[in-house]
Amino acid sequence: PVEPKVSTSIMLAKEPGKDESWKVTETENTIVYAGNYGTVQINKNPWRVVLKDKTGRILSQTVTLRDADSTQVKYTPFSFIKRGSDNARRINPVFTLTADEMIFGCGESATGLNKVGQKVNLFVTDPQGPETDQMYKPIPFFMSNYRYGIFLDNTYKTEFKFGTESRDYYSFEAPGGEMIYYFIFGKDYKEIMKQYVALTGQPIMPPKWALGFAQCRGLLTTEKLSYEIAEGYRKRGIP
Image (tube, rainbow, N blue to C red; front, top):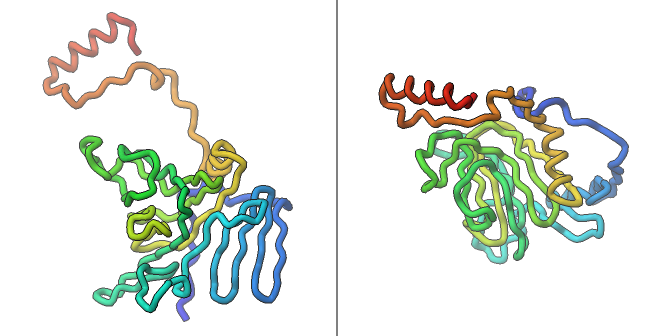
């Protein structure tokens, strides 16, 4: 067997903390982690992860081959994918999408706020304007109006498909890296964001000069023009 390589995440500020707020129970068929806002249930056969709120309502769950409604598989289930042409491996977590569910996040994007119905490419690029689905600041984290969030701890170029192949599920596919992701429950978006920031770290306080006026240098085509604008800043007391 191929043993996985032990790696240290470059996306976490520190190792996730542990406390006594989660209770674990195991039966012949399931393992259940119960917290203040919901539960994570792992079914053993067929293997499945089920997210539930504190009332027991299913928020989302992983998709398996047994979920197909016919002999024709209309989707790729939660899996690792190995491409036959070059043996390249991809991770492909797939979760169900509720009919009235809305998804928000994934970083800087000029597309619609609700990402359902969109394929979001998470890869740093210079989009040269808002008329594109590419982004300058991709973040592999999103929140659902069903009061949970998912953070994918993976730095590879990732495709998040929110109901684009089927309105019944969403997936996030990457060409490499580990399949490590965090479920985050919360009573509201603020609580979910607070826990996400605790994982990845808080931004530092910028220096005073960085809080002032910002000047784009895209149209400063000559040295003379640059000096004239800088001189204007000095006269007006702009830092």
